[in-house]
Image 1: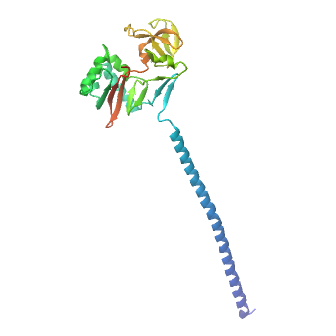
Image 2: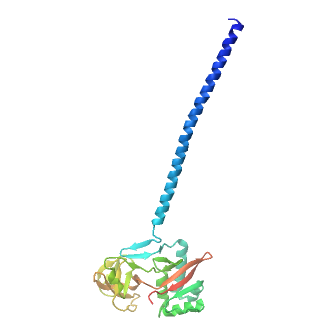
Image 3: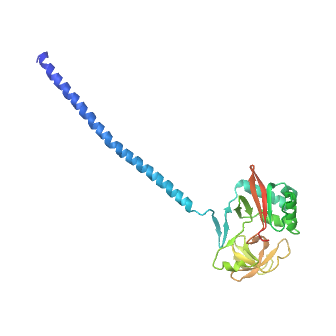
Length: 272
């Protein structure tokens, strides 16, 4: 075939290739347009799902009570506080100072905003005088009472302060019985209730985090031990070591972190 005969055929092929290219690009464009709405829909669904999760979390948070309760058998503590390492070291230090009757060192740990609630307080007096009045009100052996208050197991949060020992609320079928005077709390697990005030006396039962009523005066210290005569809700009577018996509403020492340092911020005596 001559060159002149090939030119029209080449021209026709060029036109066909051009038309095919346009049709191909159009088809690709349609595919992209079809995919785009699907992607947008998935994005919208994902966004809606995220918003739904956030709303659900907010609702759950809103439903939670403003405080948590630590339940110990039939006893609960409002606003319980779990001590961290920093707080434990502070408590250990002032506990040693209380044991050694170093009241001046404790006085130096007072917050400038120290407050006192109870009959033993001297409102309007300098905080040093208030603290000395508190020490005097704790009896012949204030160091033992102080150590008992400071070196405790359970704490609660009160108006931004950490206070201990925690005050407890009795929850149970017979809670009306604890409304009278003398009721306290067995602060420990498997505490021995003995027939007599002696470590050699027979064991009646073991008590764990349960209410008990003090039925006579706290006995004097004998062989390094002090005992309390108590009666349980079941009517069992016997003796427990005083260190394990706390009033449901006990005297409290409170603490607060000020400028990065723990301080004694308050003394509370709700029993008065």
